[in-house]
Length: 307
Image (spheres, rainbow, N blue to C red):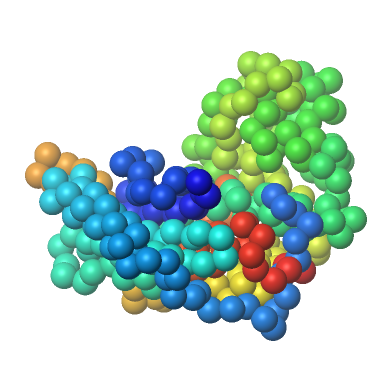
C-alpha cells in the first residue's frame, strides 16, 4: 500500500503526518534536489475512483466536524499529497472563535516547529553548494558558542544541532529565544547548562541551539535568513502565502489566530513576534495549507529542482 503524506494545521496545532489510505484518528532530505523557477505545475485534480475519493473525504470531514463540535479545536486546514498529486486540500472551522470567518485553503497559519524542516533543507542546499559541511564545527562559525564542557564545545557540529543530538537538556533556553534575545548572546550562555549526554549520543529536542543553524546559513550566504528562504524555497515553489516575518502576517487579512482554552471555552489571542527575529529557523515560518501541499510535493521528490 502506498503511503500518503498529510499536513494538518489548526489554530492550536500544525503537524505533519504519514498515513495509509484512510485519515488518521490523531491529527497529532533529499537535499540534492534543486528547485527550478519556471515549471512548477499547479496541483492537479484527484485522479482516483469516486468511491475512494468520497470515502477519504467522508473520513476527514467526520473527524474534523466532530473535533470542532466537541470544541477540541477552533479551526483546521488539511492537505494530503499522494505521489505527485495534492488529492485533498481544504479548511475547517473558524479563523477566530468570536467571528464568522471560516478557514479556507489560503488561510495563513504560523506553522511553528514545522519551520525546522525548511531550515534543514536550506542547510542541505548549502552543503550541496559547498558552502558548509554537515561535520563543520559550530564554534568555527559562532566563536562565542560555548558549552559547560570545553571539549564538547569543540565537538558540536551542524549535524548535531539539526538532529537535536547536542547533548543539552530538553528545550535549553527556549525561553530566551521567545524573549527575543540575539542568538549570538544565547550561544555564549549554553555554558551555564550541564549536558545530559555526549554529542551524538542522545536525542533531546531544542529550539535555541537549533536556531544557530539559521545564523550559520546567514553568515555563509551573506544574506538575511528571510531573504534566503524566499529566494531558495518560497519563490521557486510558488508558495505565494508563505513568509517569515511578523509584518507579513499582520498585513494579511486571512490569518488563523492562536487560541487559548479557558473554563468558558476558547479565547483568541493576539499574534506575537516570537521567532521572527533570530528564531526563524526554529519556528518562524507562516504559510497556508495550499503552500504546504506544494512543500510536501517537493519533499516527495515530485517538484522541479530547487536551487
